[in-house]
Length: 249
Ligand SMILES: [Zn+2]
Image 1 (tube, rainbow, N blue to C red):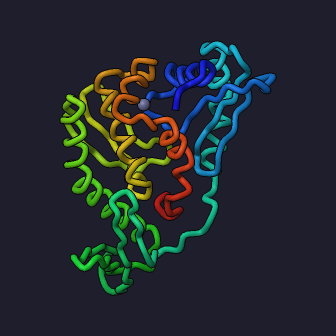
Image 2 (cartoon, rainbow, N blue to C red; image 1 turned 30 degrees about the horizontal axis):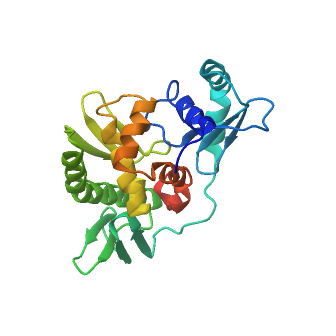
């Protein structure tokens, strides 16, 4: 999708101030906006709406003035629906996998056993919700690490970049990040997104190995590898809705 000038500009605004890897933030330029405003979505996404011709400095000041309020709202943002724990099913759309969960309460701490049949056994003291949550997040993170390393390396080779290391983390505010030392971090919640969104996020972080910013050159580079980056990036903003609420304490 070709970008209008306004869209280009609003994309450029995202670069400077927010941590470069926070994909749940966006800046939207609106012809109707009279002043700057901010919206916090239920799953922690933040949108800053700005009138035309607002300077990046102005946005930066606005954000730092409201940062505390924004963070408070984000912490409060509640998941839209209740996902029961223990879960009956884990649908890892990014990998095209469905895991049926079978509760097997027993002795010892809560733990997870994955069977080749696609069944996930929840063993031990699974009545202790926090322990079970940790066990599930731990299993998901390890699973993601095992399953995402190869596709990440393959993409990187295609793109001619070389990440040092992949790590998987469970974070409320970031989908991914790329460190100066070449470590790519992916959010375990990406497992619940579509394969296309996962691929886009990987490309996005890998391009950061070449551009540690969100400059027009960065986006041009992203667009070379994923022409539909813009709609996929939007999808990611709403991506928290796909994540089971129990993932976060
Ligand atoms: Zn980025």
